[in-house]
Length: 68
Image 1: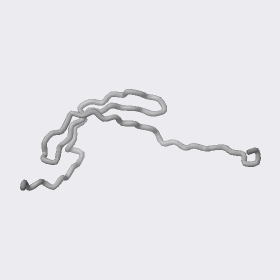
Image 2: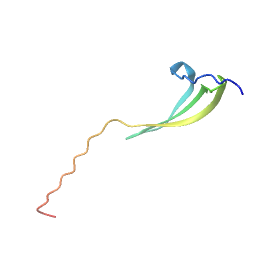
Image 3: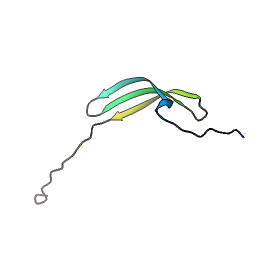
Image 4: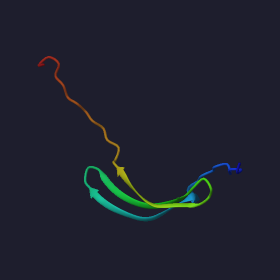
């Protein structure tokens, strides 16, 4: 059986090749093209992933319990 290297992954193990903004409004939707290192240290990709970004939000629901 082959001795497998112990997987240790960090920020140097992937590369962002391209980024495209698909939608911008209340939410932001980005399409990312990236490659990353596999378990046997081979290059995997390129692959497409979607990233949904939203700002932190607070909601206040006003309710008059006497009028319900």
